[in-house]
Every structure is written in structure tokens, then in C-alpha cells.
Length: 118
Image 1 (cartoon, one colour):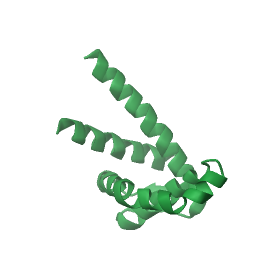
Image 2 (cartoon, rainbow, N blue to C red):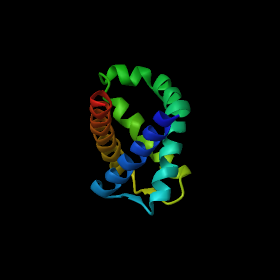
Image 3 (cartoon, rainbow, N blue to C red):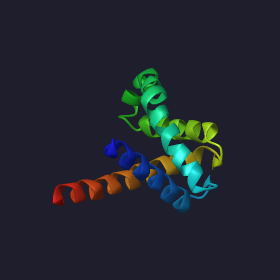
Image 4 (cartoon, helix red, strand yellow):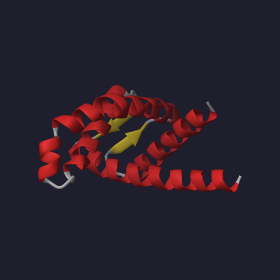
């Protein structure tokens, strides 16, 4: 149970950092980041796999680069379902998805290192 809350908290922090770094990507409050992290988990669990399967031929044709577009679409959907979270267009969604992936990866590396040290 604690792992779930830690993952949720890290996702909300990563979303906040991304909103700070990417122009056109905005969060009104920490509550919007918290709700956005929950919505992002649901979108990544339900909608993103469907999009990935439907766009598989295009993903193969572009050697996987189209997955960046799928991530941007997923992130844009999260913004549409989360009050207080806005993305102004496709390019901020694309750059936001890349930055969010990098920030989340870095935070998970730090969390895993802290977990091993304990």
C-alpha cells in the first residue's frame, strides 16, 4: 500500500516539475497535480494500450518514434479530464510527454537507490 502512495506522489511531483519546465503546460494547484497523477495512471492503464495497438503499423513504420505521439495524445487526454490542468496544443503535449518521461525516470532511479540503501 505504501508503494502505491509513493508512486502516486512521485507522479504528481513529476507532473508539477514538467509543468514548471514546459511552456504551454500548466497546473493550477497541487490538487490538480494529484488528480492528474491519478487520471494519468488510469489513461496509461486503459486508453494508452488501445492506442498503441491501433497505431502499431505506424509505430513499426517509424521505428517506434510514433510512440512519442501516442504519449502526447495520452497526456493531452489527461489534461482534458483533469480540472486545473491545461496543455495548449500538440507541441507542448509532445515536449511535456518527453520531459515527464525523463523526470519520472530520474525520480524512480533516485527512489530505487534510496530503497536499496535502506
